[in-house]
Image 1 (cartoon, rainbow, N blue to C red):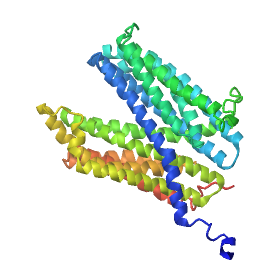
Image 2 (image 1 turned 180 degrees about the horizontal axis):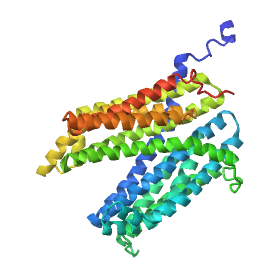
Image 3 (image 1 turned 120 degrees about the horizontal axis):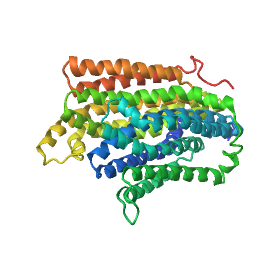
Image 4 (image 1 turned 90 degrees about the horizontal axis):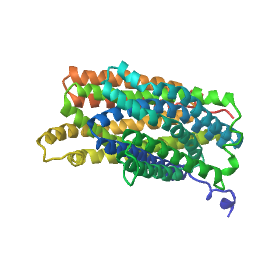
Length: 466
C-alpha cells in the first residue's frame, strides 16, 4: 500500500514510455502517407488521360508540369516551416502564436504566388529559350495558362494541413486528398474529352480539373478547421488581413533552407535520369519503372517524417528533453521497420514488381525487365538510406534546425551522390546499377550526418530553452 502511495506501480517505465510513442507516430504519420499516395494518383490520372490525346500533348504536359512542380516544391518547403512553429506554440500552450504561424502561412502562400504567376505566364518563351520544340512549347503554354492557377490553392492546402497535423487531425487530410483525386478524375474525363455534353477542352480541360481539384481539397480542409468543435476556437482566419512580419519572416527564414533541400533532392533524381539516359532508352525505361516503385513505398517515410517533425516540435515546446528523443528515435525505428519489410519484398519478388508495368509478351520488355530488376535490387538498400535521411532531417527541422541540414543535403546529394554515380556508373563500368549505388551512397551520407547531429542535439544547443 505504501508502495502504491509512493506512486511506484503507476509510474511508467522507460520501456512503456518508448512503446507509448509508437502508436501516436503511426496514427499521425500513416494518414499523411496515404494522402501522399492519393496525390500521386492525381498526377497518374492526369498522365493517363492526357496520354490518350497523343504523344505531342503528353510531352507538352510533362514539360509544363515538371516546371510547375519545381516551383511548387520550393513553395511547399517554405510552408513546411509552419509545422515546427505552430507545434512549438502548441507545446508551450500559446494558441495565439499558433494562430499567427498559420495565418502568416496563408500570407506566404499568396505573396509567393504573385511572382510565380508572372514567371509561369511566360512558360512558352522560357521553353523556347531552353531549346524545346516550338509546337511543344506552344502546347505547354496553353496548358500552363490554366494549370498555374492551381499554385495558390495547392500552397494554401500546405498551410492548413500544417495546422491540422499539429492538432493531430491527419485523417481528414487523407479524406480531403481522396476527395480531390475523385474530383480531378471526373473533371479530367468530361473536360478533356468532352463527355456528357461538356465541351472538348483537351489540355485546357486538364488544367481546369487540376484547379478545381486543389480548390476542393483546400475548402474541405479549411471548413473542417473552421467548424470542428475542438479546432474552431483557434480562429485561424481571425484578422487574416493583419500583417505579422516577424512571424512571416520567421517562416521564410526557416522554410527557405527546407525549400532548397527539397529542390536539391528532386534535381538529384532528375540528374540520375539524365545519366542513365546516356546508357540508352532501354536502361532509362527500367530506371523509370524502378523509381516509380521506390517512390510508392517512400510515401510511408514521407508521412512518418512529418509526424516526427511535429512530435519533436511539440515535445521541444513543452521543454520535454526526453520526449524529443523518444519522438525522433521512435519515428526512425518505425520507418526502418517499414523500409526493411519493403526491402525484403524488393529482394524476393523483383521480377513480379517490375513485370506489373510491362507487357511481357513483347520481346523488348524482357530487356527492360532485366534492367528494372537490377535497379530494384539496389533500390532495397536505397530505400533504407532514404528513409533514414528524411527522418533525420525532419527531426532536426522539428527543432528549428534547417540551415545545417541543408549543407548536409547539398554535400550528400551533389558531392557524394553524383560523384559516386559517375564514378561507379561510368568509370568503374557498373552502368545503371552504379548510378543507383551512387544515389544510395549519397542518401546514406545524409542519413548518417543528420541522425548523428540529432543525437548530439543537447550538446549543440538545439533544444529550446524555456
